[in-house]
Image 1 (tube, rainbow, N blue to C red):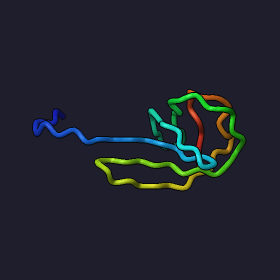
Image 2: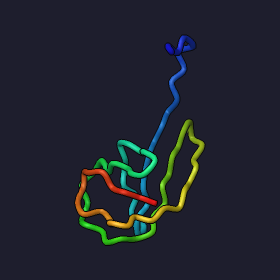
Image 3: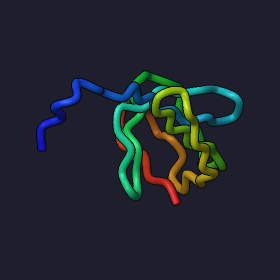
Image 4: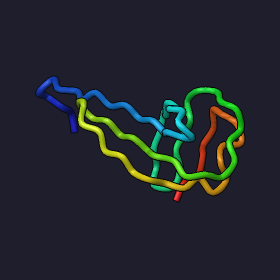
Length: 77
């Protein structure tokens, strides 16, 4: 379907881990793709932030495999 109104929402995706905010390029039902490089992170709790037009939804998630390296897909539950 083509959006004929010309409106395109502003979307930002991020993962907050141990106080650091990592930009994401993709959020799926079971994984996210970390966009920027970071040091390896062991399994931990995190917060997934999805912002659409300045309205942010936050979801508490667990990273069972941590983040071995980035950029790459990272599983969450």
